[in-house]
Image 1 (tube, rainbow, N blue to C red):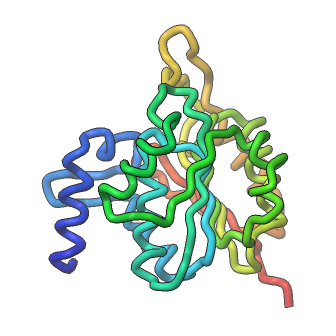
Image 2: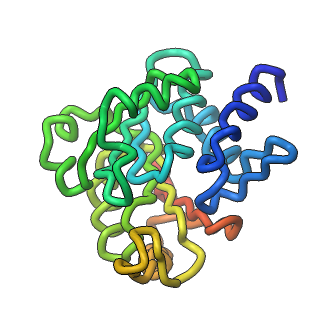
Length: 218
């Protein structure tokens, strides 16, 4: 790992919130955990566009944003989050400063739900994404909507990643009075029945599942 990358990760991990949320990070050895997968996938596939749905403090948008910046060119991350957990994403200037603090100016945030985003001009004008990362509201119904909203917009070699896909369990993300059951796993089980798809689980941290077409169109 280069010195510049070590410095970038060290600065990232000074924010304790960017070491959390089930991506198997480890501060002691500057280990990005699953972040290496997100970063490496974007470096290998070199997408012009990536979409991230949901993030507590921007770990995944920044992994992809860093990769796209390191690829050169003008790759953009489109980050969709309505800021329902708290007010962190509500002020545009603060959001931009948060990403720019880590040297990233290629992340565009949309203060919207996926349902609102797909009704917007930004969705209609979106360049075909090579990566879609789904990490918003973790119910089977919502991740189905998220997936189907971008499934036919992906590039031929595009990949969709689902976070929190290992277990069905309660989530207290929205507070003790708004506990709900995470059922992403149930939708993954549905996708595994489709012979047109490759579905690959990685049970590290809170789990991530990669989904892509079994073969690209000829």
